[in-house]
Length: 203
Image (cartoon, rainbow, N blue to C red):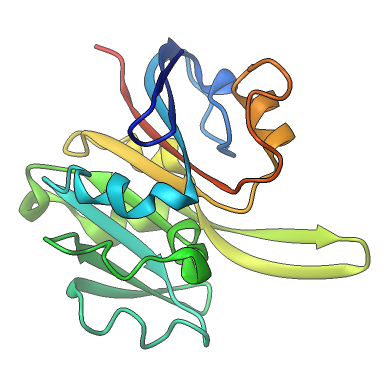
């Protein structure tokens, strides 16, 4: 583990199997090994983090709802789909893609799924989404809600996808420390953090 002071960043890189990858939920069980890269940064450093964030060959899968239906209209939308009654769009991330992300709308990061490919034109997008998207129920007390989610490892199970990525926001410091097997109180409970994970097949 290393801490980079310029971004207040905690970084981890390791190789593991599907059942030891932090944060993600997956139904894709296999004997494959994955290279995992995790970054955790203070929300005060969002602008600095995204200024140098690698956008090469990066695409985003957005699951639209009534709140964000028009939020992405100015982006480079590559394709549009419908699954489980939800509108799904695939966007090419270009220069300035994250410039609108601020503290108050950081949840937009967590509602999307990212992947890298240098051969997008060969992807069968509809087929890939059919295999990787699924419905899941969120339950908090008596509250129940069904949402559409993406299984990152099933998304990665495609020859032309090099890696998959996800951002996580509004996680407690304790839950991040537990997921990353950090010592207690490494993160400041008075600060807010964004976690990002990028996964690729271990060659």
